[in-house]
Length: 274
Image (tube, rainbow, N blue to C red; front, side, top):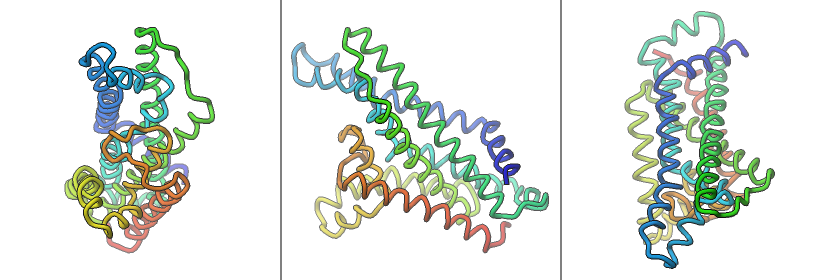
């Protein structure tokens, strides 16, 4: 079991695409949570209401919300791609036979992949927190603002919530890769859901159709956005909005993680890998 975990983790570390995805995640996170609010504050006239809000949003006090605000949509898409690549490339390279003939069972190998994805998800979340902390500290120092950092408990809660959301999207990517036995189609469908369908439901259909509004309360995106909002993420961020309580959001997102992970394992065990 631990041999499979180590092997799968080594694959993730040595795959250049994963480091590229991490770099994109950092750039997107810093752009939407720090650079754009600062640009808006700089473009406002002195004393305008938007100026204070734009600058205040980038200060250390908002580190938790800023660090996890992208996970319901655009950073979640990065994690989904990483999940697809971790599993789907085995089909593209026809390496499932090689892996499975070495001795470990399918579920053992799959568990190793989930472990590696859990580590990768945590690494992405911690990187977002670390880069956000450095950036907000530099902004506060340059603007002469106080550095009021979140409490240690708030940081742990934020990291845990971010890890839960990130791992849920990664597990969805892995399940899609197993269901479709490849890379291209799972990535395409996953991104369409995260970046298009989910936002259309959230911003267009739900306000117009009552049953759609009720349906979205049970979907992973809406609950991930609610969980992020409950921890201080800005409602102006795509996919973020406090539609349900934090407890329900946590339970629903965790439930989807279990479902996605279980579905991927069931499909891999029941179906031919070729």
